[in-house]
Image (cartoon, rainbow, N blue to C red; front, side, top):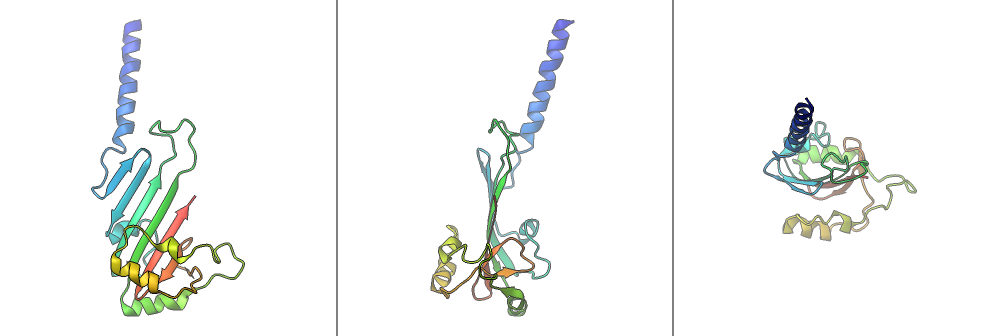
Length: 171
């Protein structure tokens, strides 16, 4: 009887462990995992639209990097679970008409607000940017003040020529 109970407990623990590990075992090909950090680098606009609302101003193309730090403790990485963090960096490419409409709703945040002067041009130098976008960023107007646009809540934007560099942190 005791052997049957021990065998049942061992089998249950094994099944539970396998199920938990299966949750993260099949990552998309553009996603890597290091410990509890998942990084996705993609050009899939549909995937990006799951992270931010792109319905009002649909880009013609995107490229983004999304980093998710899983602090849930589900993988036994942490002894004390806590809130998870995420970081999004993106380039959104727009046609002329959509970009013009977007410019009409973007503005500098009010002086003294929490986002005013929070980021500088250097904060938008993403390591994965192409050389042409990096050059355009470095040559862009240095009087930038963190634009905010209604469709992109809780993000910081740097406007280029028919392109938007976007970053968001949830800490």
